[in-house]
Image (cartoon, rainbow, N blue to C red; front, side, top):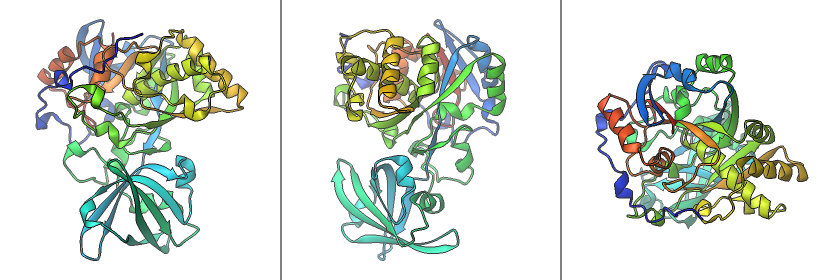
Amino acid sequence: MKESPKHIRISEYNYELPDERIAKFPLPERDKSKLLVYRNGEITENVFTSLPDYLPKGSLMVFNNTKVIQARLHFRKETGALIEIFCLEPISPNDYVLNFQQTERAAWLCMIGNLKKWKEGSLHKELNIKGQHITLIATRGESCGTSHWVDFSWNNPEITFADILEVFGELPIPPYLNRETQDSDKETYQTVYSKIKGSVAAPTAGLHFTPYIFDKLKEKGIDCEELTLHVGAGTFKPVKSEEIEGHEMHTEYISVSRSTIEKLIAHHGEAIAVGTTSVRTLESLYYIGVTLGGNPDAREEELHVHQWQPYGTQENIPAIEALKNIVLYLTRNQMDALHTSTQIIIAPGYEYKIVKAIVTNFHQPQSTLLLLVSAFVKGDWHRIYDYALEHDFRFLSYGDSSLLIP
């Protein structure tokens, strides 16, 4: 059984991050950002366009193709109070694709800004969508922790919820940017390969990639595969408890195609992950495969990866075996893709199973993402971050990048 990281003190993962080091806007050219390279304990730097030069020929690179939705909705009450509804995840129907296709009615789990001014009654907004006038109504339901059930309804069967978000919604840029969303963010806060709507935050390591980079990867014979993890608002949630045992990881929804899993098997169960969301998905696949090894007929909800599951698992099967268990499961159930969810926390003490290198940005102090990086570089994160701070690297979502090869 692996050592549990539950008693790690989050204060040990703090560092001084001056506000001027947080990139408020992206560079004009995505792939001209700086690249810190950590390889076998040695730190060097280059430009992001050089990334393919550091990757082994014929390796497999995995990207998260989720697309950020315009999840912030603003309503003004008759009293003048402004209420913000931040759509977190679909409830009815609870499938993202189906919910976006809903007409006349949809329900979401939401965070509500200025909640104290919305004690009762419904909120109304008059909208013009596709040349048609509609009234959007939001009705608050039960609370679920710090979030609330919100029912949306509108009086036009030709308008989908996706149409409403597209016109009425605002892109939710990270709170630490301390600025309003601008029109330019609609393009710059999406990866060039984003496809599947559902995230409320971008998988920011992917923001550096351009068609030029993909051409260079192809020239080097590097396979590129995609999976989907819809990034939740919990990605910005700081660890408030002294020990990480007191921090509840948010649930995120994942989808991985059969062909991607087969490609992983062909690459000996090894991959280079672009971003921490790809890391969390790939490592979750291992534990899903372990579950299926012990229970081949598990139901979809039984495949959910719990926060501390990796640290209580006695089995230590090869990654290829775990992945083959998933392929067998998909075959038995005549499915083309695995759909489930994960709450995995990756912290020092975790043993990586599939991910052999990570492309990632520089993360907030005392965050679960910094714990994930520390676990990967065997605690050497301080040296990496000290170098980045001393050498004018830009931090967080719109900042520079790193390639970690332990």
